Length: 433
Figure 1: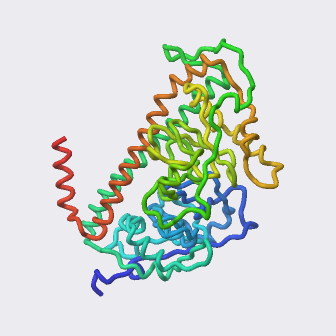
Figure 2 (figure 1 turned 45 degrees about the vertical axis):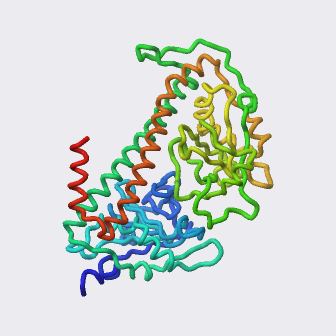
Figure 3 (figure 1 turned 180 degrees about the vertical axis):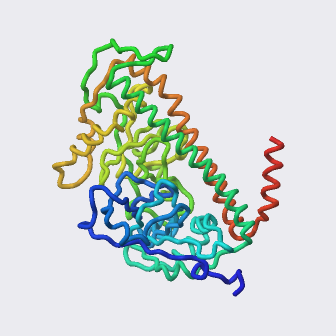
């Protein structure tokens, strides 16, 4: 058979995820990777289940290996562009050795002589592949299911191994830049949170020499959140819901994107018309707005937007609160306060006796918040604001890198760009700079 006619069925090994009952899970043991751990292009391991170590031999075939391609076979049916079904993820070192759960399939090359495993990963990320399998998905209402047999029928562009290696090298360079920036964003958030802990829990402040000095200013007060802010509002969406046929418009941000400063999933976006946005009286995002997850499973989760990230113009829907403080120097303090676990738990508790799950405006406004002296908050802000600005600068860089990669990938993966000419051209551009 000609290489140009080889399908994934001819080239790869397919391993279905295992199906385990809740009764089989253990408190610790072998971690299990689920479709729910795939958050856009990222891996979220904040909620992991385990199987007992004694299950290792029994479920040996379900263990993930580094560079495996995972494809979600079940997911929300919200239009092809946003469906979770068909979404691909390459296994990294963090989840190598996990067991793969049901509703996903693991794909490995069976022909390493003609198909590079890392190239398989980029096949899975390509829009051509995702469109191919999603158009063959089946399901009712909001649930799409993709048969593994349909995935096997995909015929990839299959250049020589040497060309595949070069394509992988170019595309992985983009991934490394993105991953490095994400690591820096996480580290900066951790540093800012640690500085908050030092200043407002341990009551110490770094001095000009970098030493920790005890804080003596006062008094510290417990006040209502409403006394510190001028804005506490949610947005809205058109009656009847989002018009999925809209190709252009204004991003309407939902609770799924309340995931922390510098983090955002563009693939989950919904659009509203410019006319609807212009008529909105509340819910328009402003500089340094804090976002609060208003209802659903993660009530009280927080995020913050700044410096035209994720968009210069955008709004939130009815499931998200926007908060802004009376004094601009206080906004970073408020964000890192409300991001703390203790405040997340307080906001969760505000909902505990509600027949209709969710935070309302009055309850959130009545939340008790510790307010240190203004001079201390201002000093904290002087330290943390450069970190926050760098977080959003890196986040915007990542968006540009992702866009560049998404433009290049389909051209490389279909052979429309000569990889040697591209590499030579890239080298010339670097030399010129």
